[in-house]
Length: 76
Image 1 (cartoon, rainbow, N blue to C red):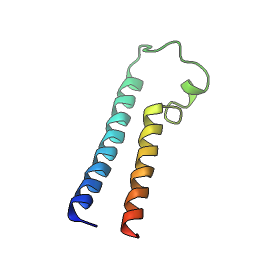
Image 2: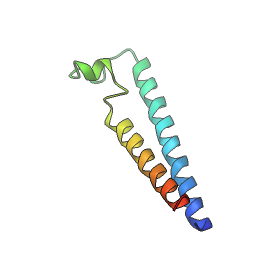
Image 3: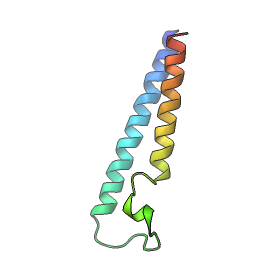
């Protein structure tokens, strides 16, 4: 595998990790505020905001796909 692909893989992983970290920081900031920002959310989404958050799900799926490509090309 070329150096260019390794650099791109590392950059993608760094971007995914930073996005996940930033999303967690924003979610914690929103949770710490006392006012209701979205009063219409009820049920399971209110009880499990991390699991049912589509941003986190997209980041996790993207991380798994990128890791799959990396392992595929490394062990090809």
